[in-house]
Length: 165
Image 1 (cartoon, rainbow, N blue to C red):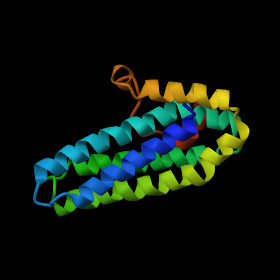
Image 2: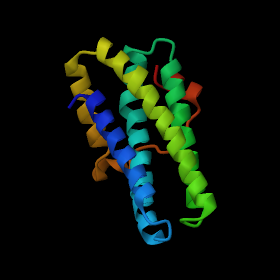
Image 3: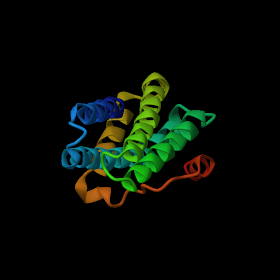
Image 4: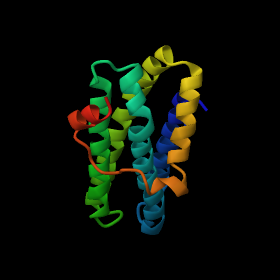
C-alpha cells in the first residue's frame, strides 16, 4: 500500500470521473449531478487526506524548502473553491460547467505536479516501509468512519507549513 501508488490510483479515478461527465448527455441533469456529487466529494476527501497524511511527511522527508507543499495546498484551495462555485450554480448551466472546468483544470495541474515532482521525490527519499505506513493511514483517513474528521477547509500555505514543521 505504497502511498505513491495509492495517490496515483486516486488520480486515475478522478480522471475517469471527469471523463464520465464528458460522456454524459448534457441534458441529463440528474446524471450529471450524481457523477459530479461523487466526484466533488472524492476530490475533497482526497485533498484533505493528502493534507493530513501525505504533505506533513513530504515536508519532513523530501521537500526541504516547502515549495512543493505550499504549491499543493494552494492547488487544493483552488479545487475546493471551484467545487464551491459549482455548488452555487444550477447543474448543467453554463456557470456550473465553467466551475466544473475550473475544478478540472486546477486538479489536472495539481495531479501533474504530484506525479512529476512530489511522488518521485518521495519515492527516492522515503523507504518503502515508510510509504506503506503512510499509504495505510491515507486510505484509513478516506473511510466513511474517518472522513468526517478530515479538515476540508481552505488553508493558507505558509501557515500549513509552519503548523506541520
